[in-house]
Length: 455
Ligand SMILES: [Ca+2]
Ligand SMILES: [Ca+2]
Ligand SMILES: [Ca+2]
Image (cartoon, rainbow, N blue to C red; front, side):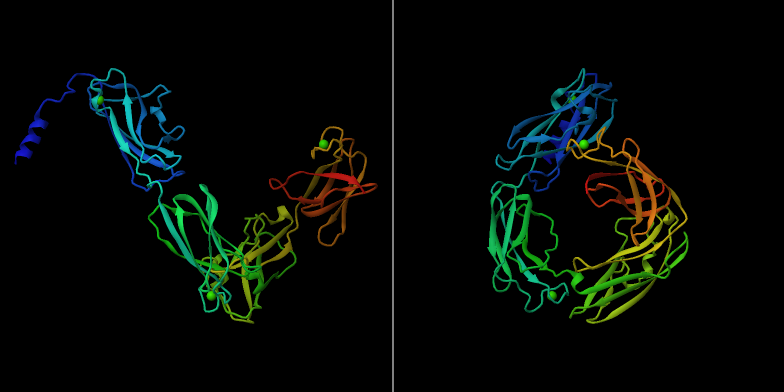
């Protein structure tokens, strides 16, 4: 009761800041986060003008008190930046800011800093600062990292009898770890690494694995004392391409835009174990002339369901319906290119079915040059002049066009159907590298140039 009365009494008293004018007030908080070096640490700021006049030239800055140095990020202060003109706060106005910063190490303990704001004609500076403590992971914090290494020979994505990998080295490295920490896996494939120091970039990797096995990607471990990192599952895999043969054929050799395509996709499990969780990942580069296939047309092999399966020895033929995209003639061809992957598998096989999409043609212009000054760039005077060049089709090597270079080494092949071609040079020169021309219609076109060397 006494306390309550006292508090009421304090609140009822006239505030010390009763003077007229702008009167800024700041509060600040740091999120709890077990912060580590390289973390971007947020500090939330609320600035209020409790006065009766507009605050001008309002700026913010910090004053380190104790602990690790807290480095504010570039431009994090925004319109409060103390080297700028400052900002304004109308009477009663309140705004929130989120500042970011980081620490370089944990050695000096939690940073304690004062956040201060200043403005012109401030009525009462006594509440213009707030003190915050940034809660770092205590210096010297370590964790145990332990797990299981196994070779997923039966491709079920799980540890199975006989799959333990013994005698391999599990290693952890990263910034601030001068030498990798190492544990050799025991007969059960288990490893234990003690004393892994705190940090955001703690990489677990393996040496001495059996040949040809693949290690799935694992992001860096965050070691901040909150663990646990003691049950890490580490399957290694054979490439799925060893177990699946894949092919794709299209039902026609030539299509028009909008034509229906029937693709025959043949998948054979040439391995000895069942394969599950399979799916087709098509057109990985997003080519504008790739056959459009609605994912559901893949049935269980849809990338959305990832539920395809193949029994040992099974040969599965999928009829997959698609459509030729409008852009196919720009490239002179259309294709269905797919990788066959699986949820718990790595490095599946790829297959491509391709067909012509005729109808567009145009000029193809480029340059031949000899690198007289050895800087791997065409320079003035390096063009290969007055030389006959020819184009042959990539597939059947048929000659489709010829041209002659001008004084600067430029040649133009006239009215060539869109597609891929090989360029040849007559006489005593030849292209230094494979001279493939990707002759596509605008805006997918790009010029070409080839360095030549004596043949
Ligand atoms: Ca104030
Ligand atoms: Ca297994
Ligand atoms: Ca040059």
